[in-house]
Image (tube, rainbow, N blue to C red; front, side, top):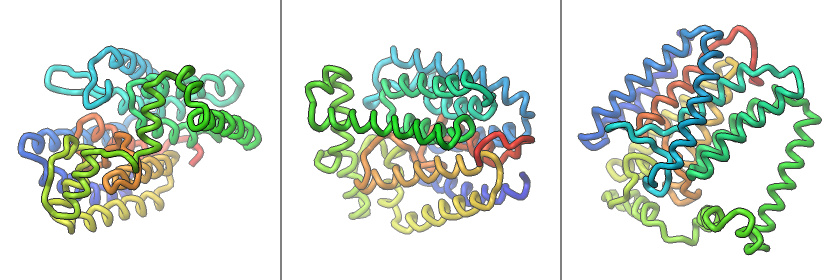
Length: 326
């Protein structure tokens, strides 16, 4: 793993850029999250597989409990995705990402029961997280699910599974676009309007997106609530347009270096990273819908930062058996 730590160089650049441009009251906190993230990375890299397997079960149980508890909390920025403990906010959906990776990694794949358990492991937190709502996290659960799918199902089974999924999705789209009343009767108005907001994002007046675009184009920062989180990219470009090249080059180096790393989970980390970067930058430029995806190693946040470093540690780790599909 030591030779792979060169990947930390562009990550350090992104984290230092984040800390430098964050407001004073966020800088110290982000530095703390950065240090804790590094510590988490090295702990994961040193843990034995039997310990990770035990942790995976406990972490999954805790994740489901927290995802359930958070649904009874008040909304924060349109979502019930955060649990407040004194002055610290915990985002259960971030913890769930790690638990799903570990559970799928160590789950036995020899029989039908394993296949059923594999599906249920992802289905339960996906439903709970979708209700929050946190569409971005559910999509990342889906990426993890698809990555491990070949471990549990044959090519023929995957073809049948994906065909059925496409039929179901196609049916839902038909109801959504052509039979709106039936769709609302089945799924409730809140889900309909959430999908409507995503599918029609180009036609809607989103203050955050509009102010982000004006800030990027003028170089003068306008107000938008998520300037330190989901729209931190626009914030950075409004401060200095050359930050764009620094960010893109850093992500390019991280992606290129990960292509050279051959570990069981290296490709999974790369897929998740590319999705988050593409979606976040796309929504900052109003090219993609706003679904609450932070920018890895840049956006402010403890749960997100530590989770990203944990996934990085798993992506760099060489397991004794090739348990994944990488």
